[in-house]
Length: 92
Image (cartoon, rainbow, N blue to C red; front, side):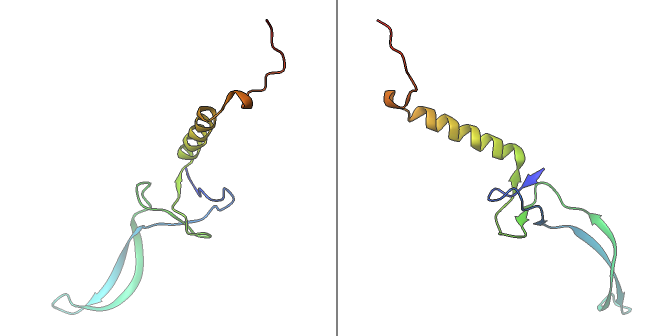
């Protein structure tokens, strides 16, 4: 599922779908008029770029958000010092 990386409450995205339009053409096949969409040839593809309709951020898979959070937690642990550890008792 796609999610907005800036705000999980943003639930609408803009992406590409492919429509089939019926045209009026002349005897040589030259366009004269578009009669509108007659069917959808292919709906949105998850590999397309999906843009948050509200803030414009590029959407990501929700699993990517979880991976980012895990990396942030790992980074915090790597930067910890002894003073950061919640040790309350020392034994000799």
